[in-house]
Length: 460
Ligand SMILES: Cc1cc2nc3c(=O)[nH]c(=O)nc-3n(C[C@H](O)[C@H](O)[C@H](O)COP(=O)(O)OP(=O)(O)OC[C@H]3O[C@@H](n4cnc5c(N)ncnc54)[C@H](O)[C@@H]3O)c2cc1C
Image 1 (cartoon, helix red, strand yellow):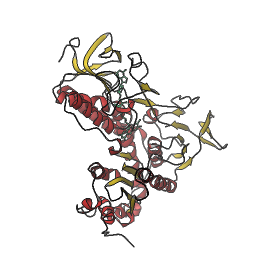
Image 2 (cartoon, rainbow, N blue to C red):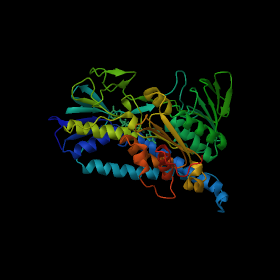
Image 3 (tube, rainbow, N blue to C red):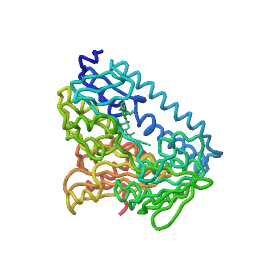
Image 4 (cartoon, helix red, strand yellow):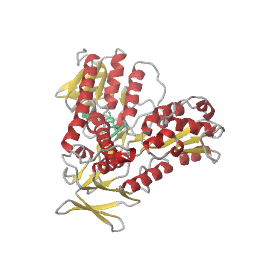
C-alpha cells in the first residue's frame, strides 16, 4: 500500500462500473491505486441499476410463466406477487455480488477509501481532510436520475427508478414518464406483476435510440401485453389526487394512477466535485474527453456515465480497462461507441449493435443491404412462443454494420452479434459458421446465409 502523501499511480474518484474496473485492471498491471467511494463499491449498476432491475424482470418472467403455463400443458396457477419476497430475492443477488466485488478489491491490494472526494488540484483528491495525490487521476462519479423543470420528486407518489426498486408493494397502477430503456423495462416488469401501466414519451416512438423496426415491434408486443403508451406527447404537469397522481400531457389528455415514475434520463454526477474549479473542460455537466478519455488537464482521465455517450455499465468497464492500460503505456485501441452492445431487457427483449438502417443509409447511401429474418421460422423461438426478428444491415459490398434483434431472450445473442460487428465480418464469413439446432442463434446464422445469397429456411 502506498503512503497517500507520496502519491499513487492512480487516484480514482468513484467506485461504480467505470471506477472499479479502472482500479482492478490498474492493480493487475502493478500500478498503485487509491479508489475513493462515498457510498458502496459497485455504484449504480450493482445497487440501483442493472442488477436489481434484471432481478425484477426475471421475477416478472416467472410470474408470466405461471400465468401462461397452460399453453404448454402445465398445470400451475398464478396467485400473486409477494413484493417482500421479490425484494429479498433481488437483495440476495446484489449482496452476493457486492461481497464478491469487495473481495476482489481487497485481493488486488487496492487502497479503498470511504468518503466523499473532491478534486482539489489537478493531481489530488481530498477526502475527509486527507489529500490523496496521484500521478494520474481518473474521474468516475457516475450519474443520477434526472427530472423535468417544475416536476418535483417526492419519493412517494412521484418517484425515480431508485425509489421504484425499493417499493414494498405492487402498485395498482402507474404512469411512467419516459419510454427509453429504463422506462420500458419498468413497464415490462410491472405489467408482469399485474400493474396497470401507461408510458408517456415525448419522442415519436418507444426506445427511440433503436432502429425504427425494433421500436415498432416492441410497441406491437406491448400493445398485445396491455401496456398502454402515448408517444409524441410531451408531459405537461402532475397533480396529487386523493389516491395518487393525475398526469396531464400535451393535447389535454390526463391519466390517473397510484404513482408516477419519472424515467427521463440520467444526468452526470459532477456538481460539487471540484471539477470546474480545477479547470476541467465540461459541457452541460458532462466531462469532455478526447477519444483516449483524457480531459484537458494533463494526466486527468474520465470514464463512465460522466463522459457523453451511451450510459451503460459495460461501456464503463471497457473505458476503465482502457484508461488503466493507457496509463500503463500499453497503447490500447480506441473504443468504438457503435461497437458497444445495447440491450433493453423488456419482454420481448430488444438488442442491437452498430448502425440503425437509417443511420447506415445516411453513412453509406442507398446501396445499403438489409435482411430481416422472422423468428417465426426459428424452431427454438416457436418452442418459446416468442415473436420477433433478426435484422442485418450491410454496407454496400462490405461487412455487416448493424444488427437488430427483438424477441424473448435475444439479449443472449448479443455476444455473437458484437463479434460480428466488431470483427467487421462479411455475411459470407458468418454463413460458414455453424449454429446449434435448435437455438435462437440459428436466426443469426440464417440471416447471414440469406445475405450471403444462400438462404436456408427462408420463404420466397
Ligand atoms: C434503473 C437502471 C437500470 C440500468 N440497467 C442497466 C443495464 O441493464 N445494463 C447496463 O449496461 N447499464 C444499465 N444501467 C446503467 C449503468 O448502471 C451505468 O451506466 C453505470 O452504473 C455507470 O457506471 P459509472 O461508474 O459511470 O457510474 P456509477 O455506477 O453511478 O458510479 C459512480 C460512483 O461514484 C460515487 N461517487 C460520486 N461522487 C462521488 C464523490 N464525490 N466522492 C466519492 N464517490 C463518489 C457514487 O457513489 C457511485 O458509486 C442502468 C441504470 C439504471 C439507473
